[in-house]
Image (tube, rainbow, N blue to C red; front, side, top):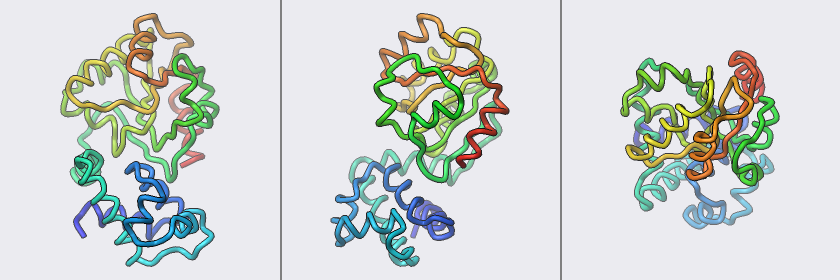
Length: 234
């Protein structure tokens, strides 16, 4: 197994809930239970039983095959997820004005919004179908003024399926413009953007979110309280 595969397999095997960890990685790679089952030569119900805990936790041999299949499927699709994971997990992070946190298993966006007392501004219709695999707490001013394009890529952590929480926001315009400009460099869109410190972002920020298809929300909770509440889920 290569290094990335070993890291993923190790997380699953050592997890207190291997089934949930298996499901997290399968969903992160965008692979259905049916597709994974076909590649592994088992029935979809077998995958479902592992993920739900109805079947005894798989051994390292099964996990190794599962992880290798996920990586192989992604490589056939162009390798976008693998490249992102290798960049973030293997190479690590330099010190930057943001902190990445990954969840043990995916959180529904509706629950995420409720936990941080957020007000949804745009694309509320995306809430029921959006899953959040983690969040990045971002110092708005420092990120906008100090972060290079190379560093900008790292705010997405191991996956863009996360919430970017910009702290110390005044209007919301600058973070949204930064995200829009970033699209010219990397084709990544977060699952959600949260603007901390305001109730209603300005018109430009809202328009960018609408046009880019970004689920945008605001919260007035202090960053420390946001982290405390989200870590209850972690």
